[in-house]
Image 1 (cartoon, rainbow, N blue to C red):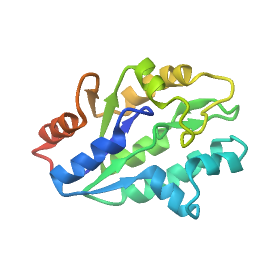
Image 2: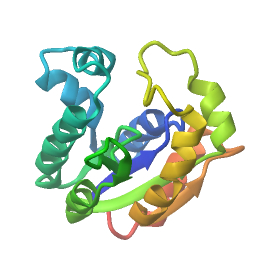
Image 3: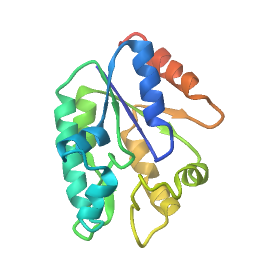
Image 4: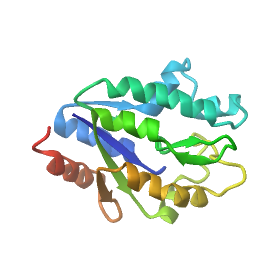
Length: 179
């Protein structure tokens, strides 16, 4: 069984995933890092810039990576914040049934749920995090994604006022009989 970590930008997915790896002696696979690897080392920001801000191709790359990971067993998957979305024909974010189904095929999805305003403030003005949409605020995008995260999650952890090691330990305790 894989443990899949989802959540918004700034929720601590990468940090919690690394801590889980130490506690469980499992390998961590980052969907974003694998996409960067498959694109010759280009960062996500560079990939998005090359496509002139069109996230559709990126979401397809993400799906290709997720399908590969779904065939693995016993890994921790650190997902990019938008793994739960795809784009409709007009470029609007919609729930990504294809990616979520692939992730759930191989494991359990843990949502690190945090306060949107706090998360937006934490990641604003970070060059390595490309703008999600020129016409919408990050807060607006995150609010729209809430039901997508909720729908995808098998287990939800509120992250406010909790340290990353505590969150990792809570995940281990929740899945102790399945690991």
